[in-house]
Length: 339
Ligand SMILES: [Zn+2]
Image (cartoon, rainbow, N blue to C red; front, side, top):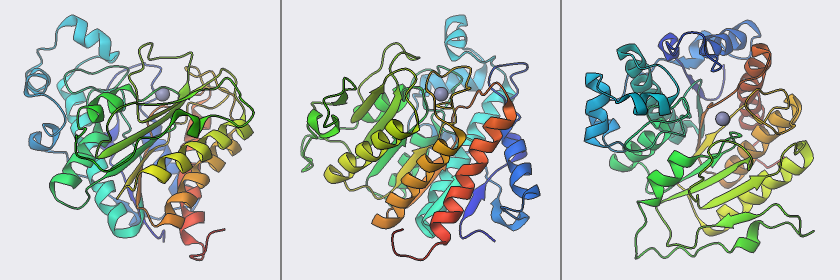
């Protein structure tokens, strides 16, 4: 029995036909966890779809109406890069419901993983890059509305920048926040490396957004997160892990989240078809362990979603995502003292 819950439904499957996004990965991850004995049937919770009211905490009424009535323009559908259908709408509402459930469980157990979600390229008024609805943002806003949290931090380690996240939470800044801004030097390397960590020169928000991503990759326009770490092509495990550690430490020096939302993309993997970094499967597991260790040591609940993963061999993507559960099991089963 795991010391936390996994959130999953067979209906996470995205009905998008033959596509670079391996929609069957969700079921395969669930199967792998069960057959390998990492998890048992009792470790899983089945989510309910988010309500329209939940979705409207993040998305505009006009956009939700278009999705509900099948009236996206050809341009809007093209930008989403997945074929619109009513069934696809249902799958995204369910992904948002899964993230809400995972957030709630994380607040109860310290950690929870939804074997799906992480659709960080969805904007309030349109979808992009395989993302229709920003499930993580919906979960954060729902937890805030229910007064279960006041603040949250997104830690986005997908190889692609979290543009939707940045825009959604940039709009939430308040003029009276006591939180200081982080200086850009806080995430610059001691050796003066050209990798530039950038910090938004604006007032603090109730949601602090961190994105570590490949600079030379989608999206072309990268709206500023609270911390963006623009990684060079081909970066390997050691340097990458140092940057994750650096960004987390920097963010947590300046912001005290009630919940961490970890977007655990599998696409920084060296054999990813849509990524240009050079991480190994083991390096990605170490990344997961690092995030979990920091969250546990500081007593901050962490909810996890999976986002992208386009390895040439889908089995590698399944392994990387399954390892995230193994990493959580290792860190959250261990004695309470930091390792
Ligand atoms: Zn991605």
